[in-house]
Length: 423
Image 1 (tube, one colour):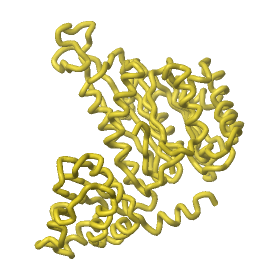
Image 2 (cartoon, rainbow, N blue to C red; image 1 turned 90 degrees about the vertical axis):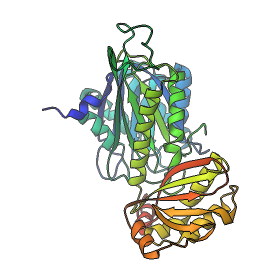
Image 3 (cartoon, rainbow, N blue to C red; image 1 turned 180 degrees about the vertical axis):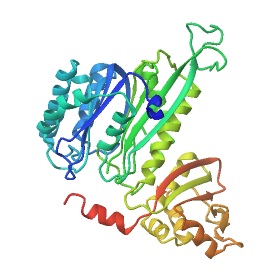
Image 4 (cartoon, rainbow, N blue to C red; image 1 turned 180 degrees about the horizontal axis):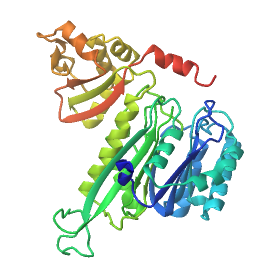
């Protein structure tokens, strides 16, 4: 009996993974996502000014093709960053070889890399296994999962997410109601599928424009024009990938790529609330999975900042807390030291009144009007944040600004992982 998960996969894509010899573990480290025909594409990249070679090539290729992608070629084990012209040449050589194999333009190939920075990428190893990858392509869930595993570095598990929605079929529906923006669940409809995979565990504090590396690939079989697809992606990342942090480090390689094959025959136009919600759901799921699999993580924390002067102030406070070593190490020890939270709020740069700050750990009152809450129970607070996952709510009483943010503790294991990462 086939795995039911395969029916969630969008039509129009095939997948394969192979061992190119980049990972010291000897595991699969090179993967392809191939669209049957050039797919509409939208992508966002790191805001780090040190940018890996594949990202430079990706931007060139998207401009050249009008945002169409036929092949996504992803390697793990080498970031292809800080390698100068040799890095650019390696990325271009890989694209040229893939283009020849799949009878497409080199500009229709979208390369990605993750791994150690500053080490030349041996493109010849990738090129050597391309024919085997082409022969192994498949559209089932097993092949999809092989790609999800091949792109991992320090991750402990693959990260995937899925969604489905139905839109009315304009060819056979009432024209008065058959609009992509107005679902018609009782009439004839077409199913749209979204599937996504990601890697990310360390070096996680994405700052994706416009606003260890995170790589995200989102696929849909809807027909969506590139400019429309771009608007949906940018909306979704603001409340998902741009709201997470493991260690406060922004990678040189962060990439989110959204591809639309059109193979479902269903067209999505602008302002389709149902499609936007499904895409955001998938992005948020992957974002939380990345945080949960953070290097050495023993606690996952959901921060709710309310009552800030603006949403931007709420985000400043969330990031100040999420990036504080003192706060994160207190969480590692399940120490309910809320004074460290107050200090981080104070230096965040946000507008605050120290005498109006309230804090809760879950439903437990911790701080009231800037001081210790009358009902503060240290033992109960310790027991609550000793859980693997917990939430902290902060009310600033300054305005209507708010933010939800996901982050982690900072442990000795994180230090061990990163002290030995390149050796």
